Length: 548
Image 1 (cartoon, rainbow, N blue to C red):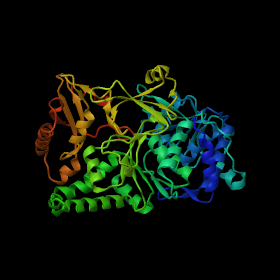
Image 2 (image 1 turned 60 degrees about the horizontal axis):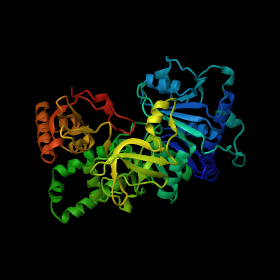
Image 3 (image 1 turned 90 degrees about the vertical axis):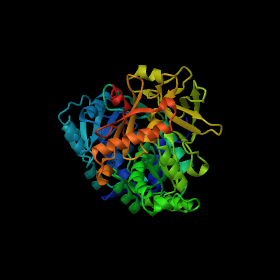
Image 4 (image 1 turned 180 degrees about the horizontal axis):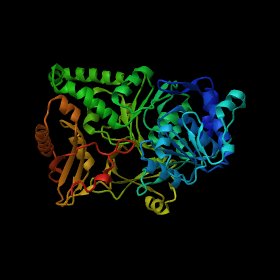
């Protein structure tokens, strides 16, 4: 266990940055670190009023906001366990998580309350509004506290602020990887696991002035929570919460206004920007011709790179990409253009970081960096190419799945290694490469391992393909389902018949550069976007019978 303590770190940052801006709801109000401190203690009073004990669960569901972050900080600093829930889950899924986690309080946005108000909460004694910390419901009306009035009547001064110690081995959070009953796993994370991620970020990534940060990834997911929120709070940054759907247009405008010091993002955001802003320039016109000329193309790549870098604000030093696989062709293009980006690797079960290397430290294209110093790694049962299951153990590995002893036991082997379910290999310089998920790997009739994610990445870079999913059918042939880029097709006047012809051309071109056992037998149009996780990975299990 590391010596740095999470709650002490939060307290030190608050005291150091007391009068500095802390949280801003983008386009709305701002609160200082001192304001956050007062609200944390105010929520502690609510917890005490409802008899919340250390270790009790408190659920939290809403879009990114100052009050979301304050609720999270108040809970973990009290010694209670925060249960963050993705706002995009269905009402049934949200209620299932609140009940399964045994949450005694539930903090929710008004929009969430409207969705779940007709459902039964089994253990929650109160449902609190994230808009103003008022009460939607309280089993005992006499326990309700108006913290806004208390803060007004008795303003907090810096000298009186203190947080009681909470040891790092205390459970801090339960993060559910899915909302549905059949697939719901509550990942139990300790203060130590969170602190490892905070410490790594502060020590290894950011040593300069705190600056501004734009938090647009869902904070209910470990990636956004660790690097857009907890780590930045520890640094004393000014965090802007984008409480709306992060479309490329909205995000790019916010970047221009906020000028963040680092950009934490998932591949889909960058891939959408690439497809909408860059591909049209490369397909036709003068630039398309000039980029094919040797030497001159270097100048053009450099110019494109400068424009991409500036699009994310003039102040950021790096784009930190994670949460899902990055399209290798787009990654190679970004690298060629000199875009300041890197790709890391993590899982909810590690809160989340497993591997990371700065873009300027020689990370090879296709790699997700080197395993962080707080973890050990091994490749289990590697094949002739060194590819096997990635296994880790160390400081930031979770303690188990909540109320799921069987699944917990299956996740660890007898030597304490956590089996990630991801396939990969480590090169001779220590860089980790991910090949895909064990569950999605297809074993060909000739005994070859097929990683559909690699095929999909190539297909997604082809004309009029927005996203794709490769599945094996009953005849053991590979079928690609494509959700087309309908906006571009409509703009270009492409008919449905022409689109089908283009997809067949894509299939032929793809097969021409594919091995015999990874060739696609057919491309089928999928009528809508594939359902995705919070980090924009397709939920493959929902489509496993699509090709039957």
